[in-house]
Length: 353
Image (cartoon, rainbow, N blue to C red):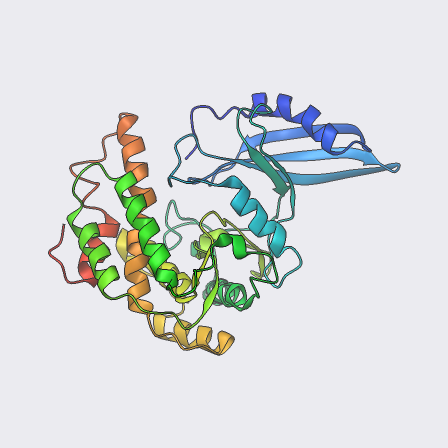
């Protein structure tokens, strides 16, 4: 969500001398076309073009600046975390944008921020949903299948990475004698208390069910956390050229990413009263393909779809609150009756909200 403090012109005037300090060998440094990105609820994102002369040659590159939102969707937003994940994935089998600089001194533009290279391509839309509009909707059936499988293959590649050798243990390896789910559930229980303003019967029941049915995962992997096609940039032939948005990456059960992907696809189709587009692979063949790619059996998918509904409820509740405080009427009791609570009620056979 773009905040009221977003001012590309002001940011550009402050960023030019900062960039010159980061690139002391270059001459004739120019920053052009600073604009707010269309996407970005969890992080404020700006695009700009940078041109300069170096070693007698003219060079240019599209750039991206990301800074924390004015109204965070999680209580412990950490810009450094997502920067480090992408930095340590450089050169791996998972394509990510090239990250350049992390600035933690808030005096430069009024907040911490980082700068990375822009990756050109197309991305399916969440708003409006990709089953009704945008690149995925406009694609042919074979192209849609390629985009879907590209996302599944990216998820599998993430899970097969050796997170320890990549230096990703800072994401929270579970202590000896505990399950990764213990930490995940404790974290989102605290997030739920932070995000809510009153009783949440369905979310509270979902949390109880998740605690009562917790299990010990067979594998602890790097989890993307936000695994969906709308966080992927696809090239001209619909190949995956970049995997984006690592704000909630963590170490845990790999099946959580599959559960999240299915939950978000439901939200982009049936959950939005939109038919699922032809050419989109089904649930069973998706699970089968993932198992072929990883060599692991998927055993706890239902549990992780319930978990996805609880996790997604946290930022949605904050968005509802932020909009309400801005004077936007979202209707009666939207905090308790929304697509997350509706889906959780259906999954757990609870009375509908």
